[in-house]
Image (cartoon, rainbow, N blue to C red; front, side):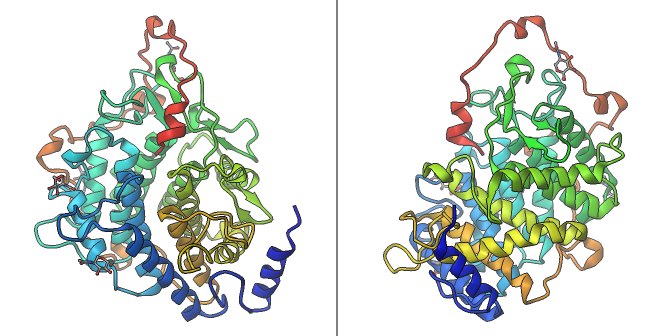
Length: 464
Ligand SMILES: *[C@@H]1O[C@H](CO)[C@@H](O)[C@H](O)[C@H]1NC(C)=O
Ligand SMILES: *[C@@H]1O[C@H](CO)[C@@H](O)[C@H](O)[C@H]1NC(C)=O
Ligand SMILES: *[C@@H]1O[C@H](CO)[C@@H](O)[C@H](O)[C@H]1NC(C)=O
Ligand SMILES: *[C@@H]1O[C@H](CO)[C@@H](O)[C@H](O)[C@H]1NC(C)=O
């Protein structure tokens, strides 16, 4: 729909002027940084008390789940990378270390009843982001940031479960949690991205093999619908009680982003894509990018299609664009041939987000509907971090920023392939075999007798 206000904002942007909402001159690095500093400050001062006496570092108050805090600290690591503003670093270092624990695997006993593989991966992303930009080290006694990523990889690898769906990880690893029978993109794509980033950062071939193995499973599963290879659709997950034959078609932008970034890290590292049988693999990757923009944008502005147009995003849904943005930026950096396709969406979304940051108590909190510069009346951690991520990304239009580092390009985080400590006694990895790659499916007919429909509420409420 034509929106005169927004078009005006974009015109002003093109002319180097100011937009509605928070004042940002997108031709000026200092103006962009000043805007995101305001957004970060409002986010932390309104919602983060974890570093105050009597609170637990790294936690956000309800309604925010534990994983969202991990995601917030990932964005705050990136905030430092983009702006150089270290004023929140002490809180960020404390939160990541506290939740990683001295084994580094982000499995604090307090979260046993609701921590899934995807939640753990989101915290791992905060540590990997820190390793990839030489974020100031954790305190003495804690593993390095890259070792935290390795610890998560080491505890998740043995959770590979070939008994249903030909393999993959379950959403939840605790059998008592609802979602134990669901195999989804957040958990499997999360592991894939963690493995791909470890491969690129450390140069250790083992991570390439496990990333490949996971990709082969995802790409062969009904989670990945490539029936139109130019417009790939990513389904959220599937029930293993029916051997994943009933993919849940719910559409979430970050499910695309998590795979696009994982593929980009891997491609950048090994100059090829996984799933070797696809000779036209490059077109396949673009097919996911095409699929993302097809479903999740309007006039080049990112829209969380499953909930935003209906004004009913839940707390989780309000965060998804933040990850999608960050992972698109990384993909554009790591696979330069994707830059021209991705970048117009980042630029337009940044302008749109700035137009939303004129709400609530002090007239500068951000809403979520980037397609209009009339504040949408909502405020929260998801809205702040989404706006922060996309406005910061616009810095690339005016300033050179390094691609994510690796050990061979100046990264200083010390690799520890055995990380994960005593809690992961099973983390000796079995060698990858042909059988692994083909997928082993030991599924009984008994299981097939149960056809479960109507289980989608789980995801709608809780993913990741
Ligand atoms: C907690 O972290 C925030 C954000 O960096 C900071 O402004 C605040 O001063 C910190 N509070 C304490 C008690 O350290
Ligand atoms: C777990 O909860 C206890 C009790 O509130 C607290 O002391 C501890 O710091 C928490 N651990 C983490 C990792 O948040
Ligand atoms: C379950 O799915 C996997 C992967 O598609 C397949 O290899 C296996 O044969 C299926 N099992 C049954 C019992 O249909
Ligand atoms: C590579 O990673 C694997 C799996 O963690 C580990 O067993 C191996 O020792 C690592 N190799 C090197 C050279 O670090």
